[in-house]
Image (tube, rainbow, N blue to C red; front, side):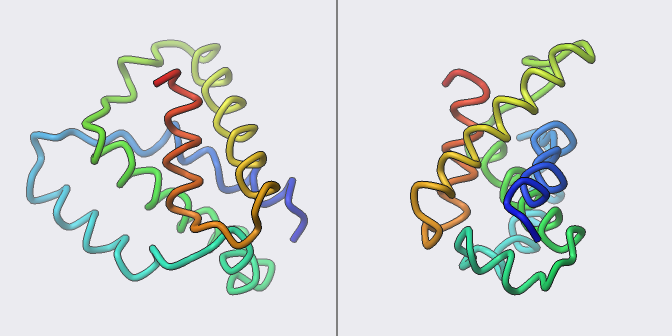
Length: 122
């Protein structure tokens, strides 16, 4: 899978993973679901996915949800239109591509977290 297909397919997670800090049970379940995949690097998620974009998408989505939850971010505050969603998605994709391009062995969760911060201007 090419890096562009990886980022394009997987990184819409920024826009579809809103998490409310008040939903403790759901948040705990989400974190527990993400823990087994937090070891991935930029390279390992693509390697383990064996070309399965849905696998890569799922990993990035879970990591994005954890990042948003940890930062207590309600993504709907940053996006109330299709144009906002497109802008945030593009910024997230670019930040993730830059982070993974800089170091393919970087821990993906850290790259995702940095991409969330960059896309939201935090």
